[in-house]
Length: 156
Image (cartoon, rainbow, N blue to C red; front, side, top):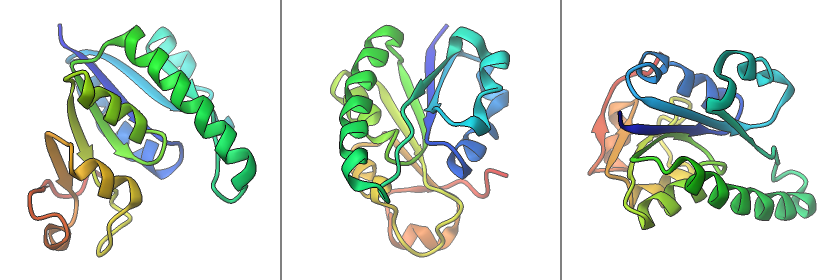
């Protein structure tokens, strides 16, 4: 069975990712998100198939730099532990390093641009657009910004 990694930051990005729950059962699926009080209960549901990365916000830039370095190191460890054939993400900064690493080691990368943006690119979207095997937008207007993307409609 194909290993598929679903990864996103916490909050709205994770909410979007969880809309893909029907796919979790079709594959040997793993989930990675940021450790946050709001999603601690996911461990009870997904057990050893769920991993957490450190939560960091750019609002606290000094500590964010160190947390992001730790996130990158942990990303390398988790990538080689899971060895996914496909990486599916709804973003944001948490997923960027995993997608880049996955691309280097020939995982397929599927990026779903956030529903929250209707007329501007996200920072992670700008980076991953260049390397994604499939880049999906949820608003038709976004095809103007990402001409090689696929319009997938709303994830909700």
